[in-house]
Image (cartoon, rainbow, N blue to C red; front, side, top):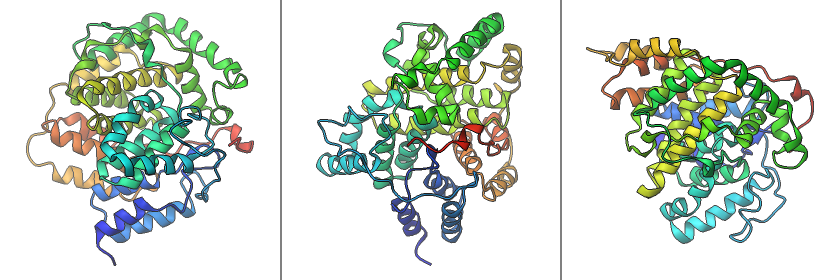
Length: 391
């Protein structure tokens, strides 16, 4: 068997399959390789997972060969085709050429600030692809991530952000404040969400890609963010901070309010991606990454029915705010990791991979170990999947 690093690099460099399958479903296999490698899976196990996923994903479909491009992407037209889902491989060729000319750091500096507003596109998976590629230190996967962010771009409209906004000292304070707002205005806010989701005219006008309507989930997120709400743009003071751990804490608290929630899990794994991307940007552009993440988080949560009750979040906060794991915890983590690497549902090893790292760097805060064991299940596909893909 080749060296483990060689196997990882070869799998992440593979170009046998398209970035999506059955329309808009993301090919997650390279994300899984990064996570499983980080959890210590040997080379043979990584290869076996890759082969099995390519043959049959947890959705019941196999991966598909690369799709032909409709356009040749250049420096002159790359913005014109953002979010049109037409030319993934040509975007790869474009960013590949630019990286060879400029180097990866300069490519990230030039292009990522324009791509970040669309970070929730493809249900955050394009951002995950780029951020996790940077985490793994892999050039080609990074090129794919940039291309996928362009291919699936759907803006969260950070230009609408109001600064200075709320004076909340930390992300959890913002979360609790907004949960209280939902408690006080739940009927009104739920009615607002239902109303905009019932309006599909942006698809008919070409403002939202029709394949997102087939997804259901991706349409709800894109539609909510395109319409926008004043609560999204009241930019908290903490978005200027350099410490990412309080944001992980708030997002993990949100996940524990609905443990195993498939959508909320993605906010954890995509936060890891956004952080990795932000760390490669100039200091004056990092705040943009945090602002985009926060707006996208709120749009995602609002689109799914709103925030949990404030009293529930507050109770969880009291339980975990000062909780730190004392003494050896290797057996606890061994059990969680052992379960994760057996999972066909690749979102679970990704969850464990991220939260174990945050647990280590946060001084072993208990919340991350507890949340890491709350696995999700592959969701049932909606009836709209009975229709053929539109792209």
